[in-house]
Length: 285
Image 1 (tube, rainbow, N blue to C red):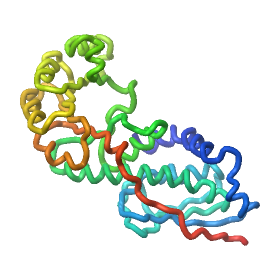
Image 2 (cartoon, rainbow, N blue to C red):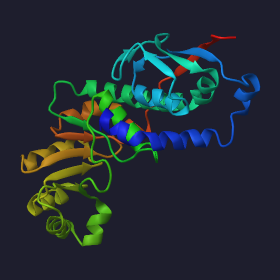
Image 3 (tube, rainbow, N blue to C red):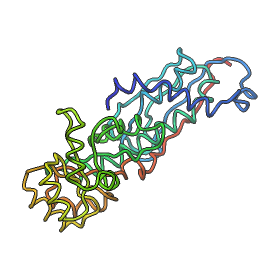
Image 4 (cartoon, rainbow, N blue to C red):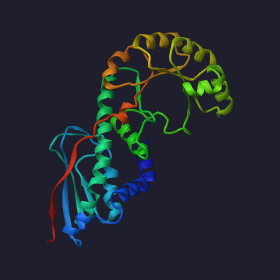
């Protein structure tokens, strides 16, 4: 997920968010600003963190009025400090007021994810383990949330169900066992697709190796069991740890030797980064 992909896909989603917030009119703004007047407002950080989603923030205002000017003092991926001036937005005061909440909702959410992700990535420095996100994203927010994960320094797992084969417990049950599930996936999938399978204990690990899975996901295992599984697999498949992985668990997982750690918490449990639009000035009273 990168900024080019964002630009290709973001507009319809941003417009949908704006329509959710403005069904017919912004009656509060129209009451105090009945006609167009030029103004400016500052974007201020109210907490320390990693900024992500500046393009989305800017796009909210430009979709309301393409003449709006947004000037940033930083870029996505930069660390900001509480009280820091991140940028200024200049344009029709009605646009500044009406777009404020939607723009901040995106930027706060994405920056919160990037901040939390950066904290976890830092815990993995010096190891061979790659941090991944999951599909546990907010509906209609996946493109934004996965982009924020990348800004935070982690990598994206598959984007959606069309993006790769991951056979979980219910897929295995539906197929009638691990070997059958892998064989059926191998027969169905193009040769360029890897096959990943979820396992819960060492007996399933052995089945997955014998079945020829490309990636074996160790789900909800203890750190000791994960290490035993990685030692048994011995490079015959890539390994991924998953299952309620939070920042606090990372130190105990590192020594297991897994290739990847996937964490739904990156997107479903990250706290927003507190940001605010302040000091609005009307320039042509």
